[in-house]
Amino acid sequence: MEEASARERKRPREGDASEGNARMREVWKRLLEAAAGKPQYTYLPIADTLKVPGVRVCLFAVVAEIGAAVHSRGTDFTVTLRIVDESCKAGISATFFAEETALLPCVKSSGDVISLHNVEIQHHGEFCVTFNKKFSSFALFERKVSAECSPYQTSMKYHGRKHDKELLTQMRTWLPNNPLGLKDLELQLRSLKSGSTFDLVCKVLHVHENSGKWIFYVWDGTDTPAAEFQAISDAEAVESPLLLEGLPLPREVLCTMPCVGTVLRIFSDRSVNKVLHMQKGIYWARFCNITCEQEFGIWKGVFLYSSRVRLLSHEDGSVVDRLKMYDSRNANKVHRQPMASFPSNVADVEYEKAGYSTLMESLTHHEVTHKLKTLVRVVAAYPCRASELRLLSTRKYCIRLTLEDPTARTHAYVHKDNVVKFFGGFLTEEVVIKKMNKLLGVPEPEDSEEVAPLTRNPPWIWCCLISYYLDKNDRWGSRRYQIYATTIRD
DNA sequence: TTGGGG
Image 1 (cartoon, rainbow, N blue to C red):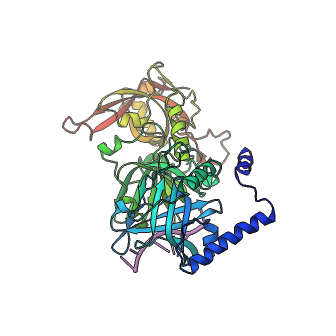
Image 2: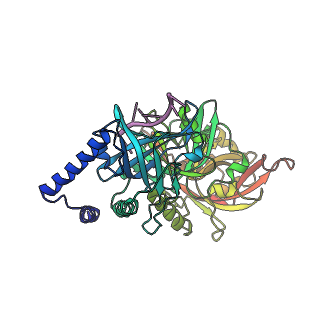
Image 3: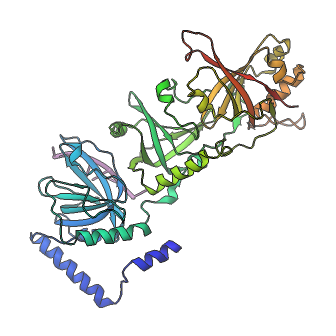
């Protein structure tokens, strides 16, 4: 609302009819001259150029979306930008070709301003701007009002025009009141909903490719919601996997992952994504029109046929928002804890004062062996069938739990010496089964006649862990976790 | 020559 009125103030009043007609006459004059082959030195609004496809025109516009530079099917590299101006807020795509990526427009940030000379509008089902290597030229300017007026990149043949500076100032003033892109399609990891399609602004931390199947490891500083599980599936309670992908990440890659916030895996089998292979290192991107689902209680991003990826700079508004939010979250002890957690009093830990660690913090810890206090859910247990749990009361067996927080999953063992303490000292068959159900979130049957519950929702519990290794020649590879100093309440 | 489609 405030935004709309601000825009109203900035926008020149359409005013009376004669003023409008005069402007149109001027535009048509220029268009006709351009059509007649006369060189054009004035910039036209995008909307006006659409009326004269095939004619060389000049544009002064804002870069709304930045594609990834890729090999074309020919011999060149290519990049596609979406550019917008006041006359055409939906924008138009502009494709560039060059022998080297360095010669392509390298836009630092969406919102930067581009000047295009002697480009042509083409219409193949949709309008687009065609940049011709032989006679077109471009210049890029920073979006910041305070920045200088000279371009930060120009193509070979670019010659500045008299009004560049004036237009640049105009564009820079127009920009802040016209957010680029459609924000209402954006979701954050914390607000994921199964089956919806949405845009995700995220940091791409790692990309893995195996025979045309791609996995993007992305992060936005928030936590995916805690999943509910099928209560009827014993198999799931035993077998729930630690990862969606087959093999765990190599340790050197794992150690680059943030310790707070979920790293979502986005899966794609589209070879189109080869494009992103060229993007080295870590970058921010907008994954457009993707969907998500849960598998074994783990959120999974899915790249659809209609999905696209747009690169974002660190200065992009959405990126700045995410980073600001993460910084304030990370600075606060409580906010570092899982966003969806309501710590229950299902379990007691002895080390009340010990510092809190996420599972990822522990997995990436520089020491193989260390202790930590976590806030986790028990998503699976082995054994978990009543007939097997019974054996625990003999104190000769251990139990393996699958722990989860928004950052990771890991197995943790309750060693046979700790089993008694863990179950609160009374190792009867009944106590063990009741407490395991409590941990796994299986609702108590209120009436024995009632049908079995369909879902279970494991509570968040505080839990002390200690890591150790089985093989001193492979300390990292043989690392295990043990639960200690933790008791499930009655 | 080559691209991408809101």
